[in-house]
Length: 328
Image 1 (tube, rainbow, N blue to C red):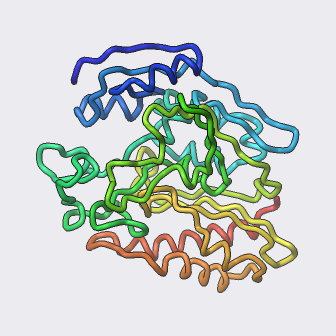
Image 2: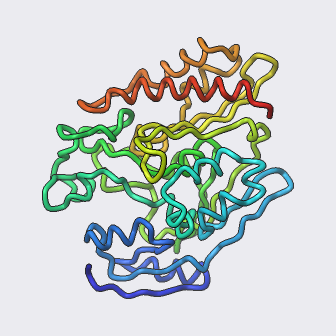
Image 3: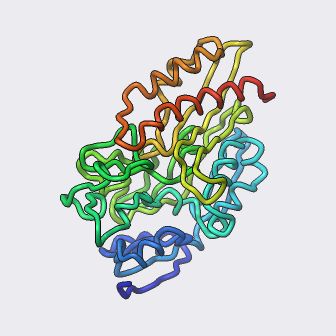
């Protein structure tokens, strides 16, 4: 591991001031970044520990929620306002990693975690454009069972690993950012990038930009929602496919629906096509399957992950059927 300096800051201004220095990385719970340091895939000159910042969860009267970036994942999943207003998010967090990791991980760090593609970590035996731009991608012709079926490029087929971010995408979360040049906010669905020809860039963050909070807008039908993760074993496994869904019915008709998918793309994949297909339609098995077909019509499976298309289609169908039977 390359030697580095460590600073623990007490306010956002100090964090951003240090963050603008070249070679600096922000440190949350360290549940991913420390692994990357040990593997020498990250070699910063300085770590700025931001875990003392913004640890509040603020429920608002309009039904929205403001979540500090340094809130631990376990605390967020257990918060009464999350369990009551956004149970999908609580379920997604509890589906990720282990209890020990969730106790350490922070919300901001979860947004910044990098892919678990085995070729990315194999810096001695595999080519990876995400690790070394221009090197090539051995995953495309390799063992690619866990890799992307949507939005991939000829340079990268890696998937985004977070369960929490899939729920945040479905909930329309907004990310608040602080930078030396000023504050801004953007939808979570715009934070993470598709790989295109720069898979080394996971997000649209500017150098030194700090995630300070995540805002969840009100979602009146948020109680009729769930998160389902399909994986190889019951715990401590990344998603083959996951579905975050919330459904509002007007009688037997779909009034509103929110959908997002994990394990299928380089970013949490919001199901805009399926949502458009479903709104105003009868809440039937046939309509759910038609929406799934529309969402995955552009899927481009690799040699070992063709099963993901049908798995995602069937998982979405099952989740929507479950929600129609749920009492909101």
